Length: 328
Image (cartoon, rainbow, N blue to C red; front, side, top):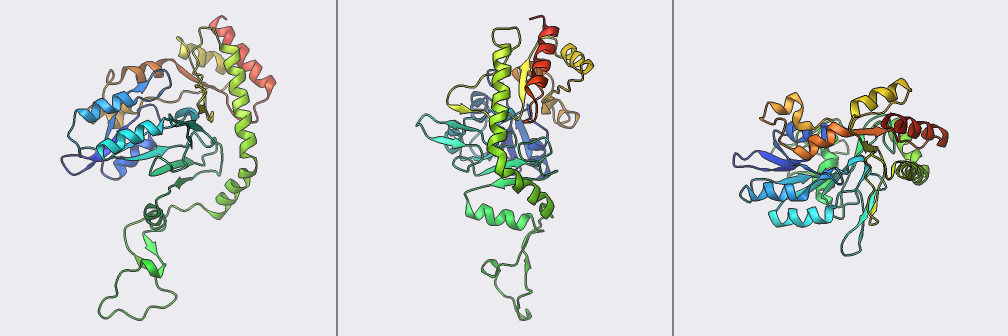
């Protein structure tokens, strides 16, 4: 997804269509325009070549940022996107909601953990109940930029600061400032987690490595079971540590398999309907056929059960049920 300042002065960004709509909607909340780009069919991640092609179609300055998504827990090659963004004067916002614990090693043999701030100005994580760390709802933003950090602190608390070193100059007739004093410096929001949610999320940090390891074990069993069959899987290369929020397969009769698994009480799911085909975004001119790889992926994708408490016996039942339907 690309986000930048277009000729009208509004923000526009480049966006990936296989994601939850929230990662596109955030631009619309700010009055910006969203531009989508196709996916790499080998990874289902944002295709950097498609992004580059779109950038080349517009003058520098038309866009202001890119929002890649670590879809399903598969890390985006942010080093390559950083190089592209720098060439066009763009910022990067990493949607890492699927990828706590994910990482990749770049061409210089440097490891980058998803959301560590080494490449993107900001990274977003989710604490939704199905995520790696579940706090009921809410999320977290990480950054290594101190100015952005302070700005975010204000935005989450109505735009208010009570830190004296951030106060603006005094004005004529202003009453004496005391320990009660604070300033509303910009229009912000009430976007703070409750203490109970924060405590719940923090408590899970003690076992997050074990939960990630279990997700990877489950993925390995799926990989081994479906290798060499008509069931298409996506096995990451050796320089990638997949976080496996989702385990996605692709099959020709996705709807048939989805319905069949439901009869077996296996709650498979589809991630995601391409955002550009949602009614809200189609009003801006997006239509079927705009992104063939994303639409082809959507027609065949199905997410199988993937969570740390899935037992080996339950997983074997899922595997055998999928194979039964596909005929392998």
